[in-house]
Length: 262
Image (spheres, rainbow, N blue to C red):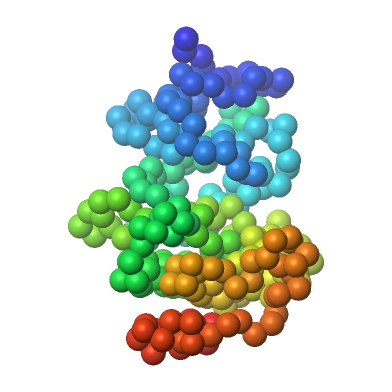
């Protein structure tokens, strides 16, 4: 049964077959998270598949602010290594983020499945370095670089990135950013730079640190900061991390040294 979502309040959550923003037909759920539900949807106007994040207005207000922040960040970015955002819309009871649908799996999924070679990790790292350089040059700091936010493309097309950075929902914009002030802590603890965990306003260096941890995990299979509990993880933050050069003496020295220096 098809529905068109246009109710102003007290509406049911989005369901399969719903038409939102008068053009996107919901097909099935791709994933759920703290910032809403992501659907595979059909763009009936342009006849293409998209990823559509639904954030109900009754949810935590942080999610709605994250949607706006992600759209503002995406408006500054146009890079093959960053998932493209097509539209931010609202129909009165939910906000919708419509983005590029990337066929692939996350870096974390592939690592846990043992599907990544050392060369793959290096290629992913190179793609992410380029993507972050593009974002930083335009005043955008991601603040949540981690394996779950990196999508490895199944079949990269000519000119497309081998890996794409997703989810700018907690990004910091270098211009006035009243949404997140000093003292607020956002991101994922096990991949967070120490200054970010302290609630300080962060710079591009925080993303570099998070990327280094992500790649360290790709090459060793472990995150040296992650522990069994958040409290135990927090106690590890700020301490000198184990050397990748020592853990993987078979890697090119200049590569391991670059990760250790971050």
